[in-house]
Image (cartoon, rainbow, N blue to C red; front, side):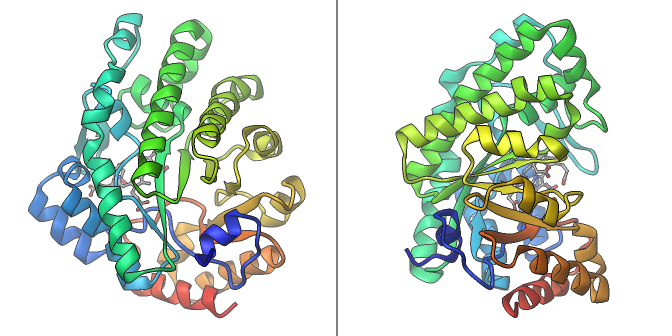
Length: 344
Ligand code: CP3
């Protein structure tokens, strides 16, 4: 198996480590902004395979990353289940808040295959393009983890603290558990179809995992993640999962031991040395440069990058950010980062 990122996921250490970045396609790239301006809306981009495949490949061409991540969004699953979704400029996603049993019952899993078909077609196109032109680049499929997707659905969009989903966990746990269970099943179907279309590994984004107390973290973060990973492994044994439980702090050890993830993404706040102690060496780590250090560039970029590389020497490791690329990032800083990591 020649692809460096897949070698790491399969337990072989590779140094210098493979590198890709969360949100590596997007507004910091002029070539993305040009296509985005023509298409008019983000949803149009994400559901037009020709455009989504092109955007997926842009950062791979420009920087030679070790992975291409499907260009889509974690909120495509609720949208495909029939939950309305718009992206307002400067405001982020907006959807109707899901607060009642009637709202839950309105979701329709039968819509998923047809609604998500453009995403699978994008995966097929990217997979083919990588086979022709970028043979060492791994194609990563993804979904939001059930809890984080539920956060946006219950809130009705973004939030600083997602108080509504936490309120629901206490006042109507039956409703929240029902939503998480439906999303868990949809996520398995959605990721399995991406793998069948050519995704070589999948990543679960749990951006808001860290807002729950431990008992609820076990119920709504660890258990559904374990179910998704176990079901995928049963259907598609070769496929490994990267899981990113952002801000989960000391729960990271239990999360790793229980979920079955082959690789755990570390957020910016996690000390890489502490993560190495908490997580067994058979599990790969991914992360965790501060996206703002990348935006700043210069000596900040250099020193933050070498601290991470030093901590991860001798580990199964994939270099990444601790969260997504921010739009103000100069593309030259990304090229510099790739150079620094490849010189390790
Ligand atoms: O990483 C990649 O390059 C692949 C594409 C990708 C997007 N979103 C594209 C996108 C991925 C993996 C995501 C994941 C995602 N989406 C997460 C999890 C990771 C994280 O950042 O915590 C979350 C929480 C979302 C939900 C979401 N989508 C928000 C909150 C927003 C608005 C904020 C923003 O950055 O604009 C989006 C929109 C979005 N998703 C854009 C992109 C490129 C910007 C769309 C545009 O206006 O062009």
